[in-house]
Image 1 (cartoon, protein in one colour):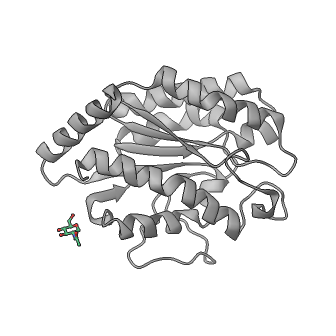
Image 2 (tube, helix red, strand yellow):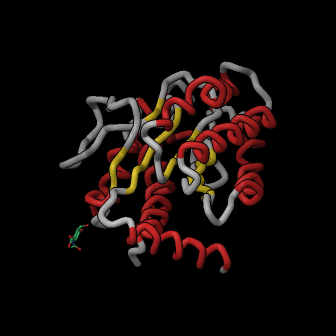
Length: 230
Ligand SMILES: *[C@@H]1O[C@H](CO)[C@@H](O)[C@H](O)[C@H]1NC(C)=O
C-alpha cells in the first residue's frame, strides 16, 4: 500500500516533466540478445499504446532474422551473448548507462555465471547488487525489473538458488525512489524443457512466448505507473 502510493507520486512527477519519453533498457546475455521475445514484448507495449511514450536504450540493435518483427519495432537493447553478471557489474554496466540513463531497466543475468564462470549464488546476487548501484548512480529514480532466470534442461541448482533468493533481494534493496519489481521466467513459474532449444540453455519459440508473457505485463504495469496512466 505504501509502496503503491509512492509509485503514483513518481508517476505524477513524470507527467510534470512534460513529454519526456521513458527510457527503457533490456539488459542481459544471449537470452536477451539472440532470441525473439523482445518483439513479442514490443507488441504488448503497442497494444497498450505505450510505444509512443518510450525510448528503448542500449548500445546494441541486433535481432535475429528469424524473429517476427511488429511494425515500428525498436531493436535497441543491452543484451550481450556470453556475458556474466559478475563481469557486467565490474566492467560494463556503469559505462552502458552513463549516457543512456535508463528510467526502467529489465534484466535477466546469471546463466553464464553458472555455466561458464562456475560462480555460486551469493556471488551472482552480489553482482546484481553492484549492477543496481551503477543503475542508480546513473539515474537515482530507476525502476528495476529483475527476471528470475529460465532453467537449463538439467535444472541447475545454482540457478534455482538465485531464483529463490531474488524476491528477498528485491525487498531488501528496493526503495520508494528506486523500486524493484520481480518478473518470473523460472521453472517454478511454468518454464518447461519443451521451451528450450537443442542446446538445453536458450529459449525456442515457445520459450520466447513464455518469457514475453511473464515480462511484458510487468513492464506495461511499471510503465503505466511511471507515466501516471491508469
Ligand atoms: C496513444 O498515445 C498517444 C500519445 O501517447 C495519444 O496521443 C493517443 O491519443 C493514444 N491513443 C489511444 C487510442 O489512446
